[in-house]
Length: 99
Image: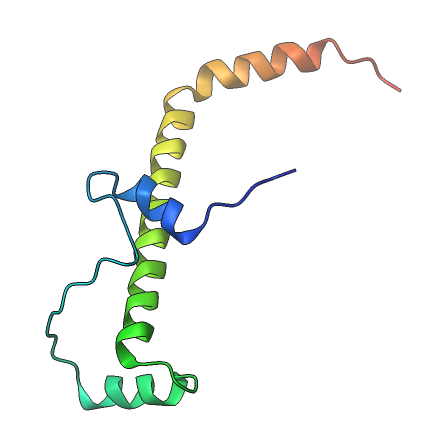
């Protein structure tokens, strides 16, 4: 049975040096266009702050970026070993009998 990582675990893998902890908060200031703020207000759930929405979106984006980078590394490893893997697959297929 597959086990999926939590967002916190994904961030720990993506950014092990920062040791993600959702209780640690740092106040910062960003400048957003009026249109983006209006969209934030539209998607905000009752009682959900803009900061919560932005943090969740950033977490999701960072986790997705980490997944893409991992997938690219995996693809590079596969491509680096493609010839050997293909030869091995052909060898295995040669043992199959026709039905």
